[in-house]
Length: 100
Image 1 (cartoon, helix red, strand yellow):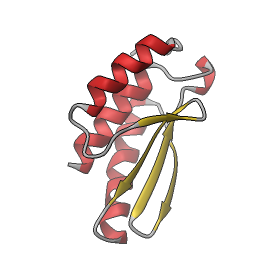
Image 2 (cartoon, one colour):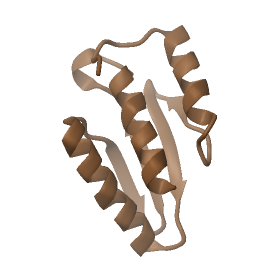
Image 3 (cartoon, helix red, strand yellow):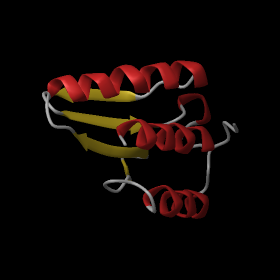
Image 4 (cartoon, rainbow, N blue to C red):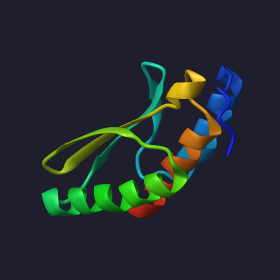
């Protein structure tokens, strides 16, 4: 997976592809790939975070995220590249699969 910062056109194209199968849209917010996931309850939200953490660790790419009750807010960026990369989109896709 490439850790090279994507330009605006590549981000827009990748965002369109990602959102084609997303339960709710991902956006770019403050230079990061952003989404808030909603679950039925805290247990489901926390279960998602555990599974997503294992995927992130296997990719050596870790999200910025926050959990409040049944909501998990996710921001993805590749800090060493200074912006959004293919790796962020790959992790977002894995999160979509995990969230089901």
